[in-house]
Length: 262
Image 1 (spheres, rainbow, N blue to C red):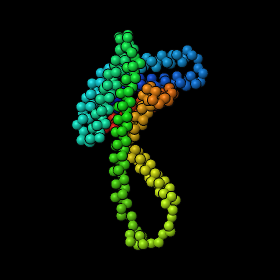
Image 2 (image 1 turned 60 degrees about the horizontal axis):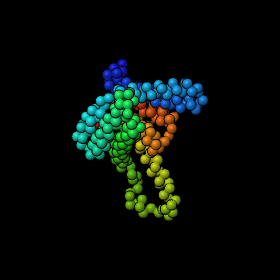
Image 3 (image 1 turned 90 degrees about the vertical axis):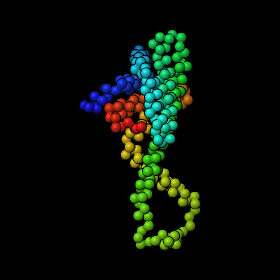
């Protein structure tokens, strides 16, 4: 119950829920189209999606200030990579929200002659840059944790590298049959790849905030890629990605310990 109280107390909670509903409508509209539903039903779902999008833009008014404040906080981080990624990401988010606010004035009729297509592309471009930096930050933190885990495993197994009955010199002097480098390389690469994948899985399993943030950003990045026509995936895939990322965002708000910090 306390989690829901904290959830409702946050200003962005409603926007995240409406975002999930909006992309659910996108996915539903695609499903109805593929299923050959009536045009009137598809039109109703499309209008509902548009209304939710406009409502979200209204709820995001003023988010640029919050993003700028986040950039001010991140600029004091000691890690230079995190400082760079987070600060520039927050600045891009601030510009994205600013463009989104301008776009809202056009769609609400306050500015009738606004070039909505231009401002929409501009906002999604800033959104894409922000997501790229967020993913860079996620990969950087993943690499740091993998290095730490690898050092821990190496230190843990250092005592068992050489059996007590056989010295390193004996192992080096023991006869071994020559093998072709190409034959040896494939099993070695396969073993190394399996170890790396197992290491990634272990690190992500033990760090749910990083896992959720990585999944959320990976889903989100397909939205601006599709809208900017850099990598078109279609409304069905975009709707599914948006719905998944929205649910993950809601989870991090209901359970704050799942939010990646800083």
